[in-house]
Length: 165
Image (cartoon, rainbow, N blue to C red):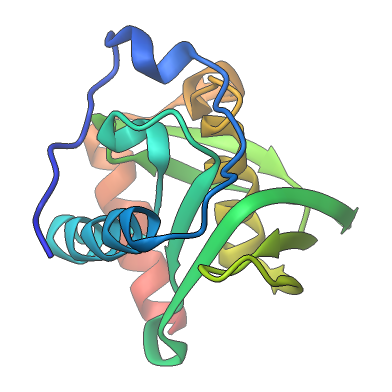
């Protein structure tokens, strides 16, 4: 495994549409392992292929105690409810915004061996599904944010979230 460089806002790779994965081989497994290591090192919740310069439909999401969720060729198949919350991105360091997202999201994806499965997430995981899948189509959360937050607001909101847990 190896740490990969996280691509930052302004790099054209983040605006490109990713191609589907068609080979479920050792090269894909290495990419997934590298993305996992990179995500854990960066302290984020999710990471998509283009964020490490790879234009493939690949996402990893850290589910904390439930481990890492790998999504290959993912698509949203159901969504419901609404949530409104603070969002940031490893590719847009230091910027946070308020974004409306569905509160429950179900995705269909393939695992590292090409087998299809479904996963459902609520609250933060639902937000993460939407955020990361948008990366695969060349979009950043900054396009959806209806308001950007000051550093003081981010700190206050972060403390409030910690108190809830």
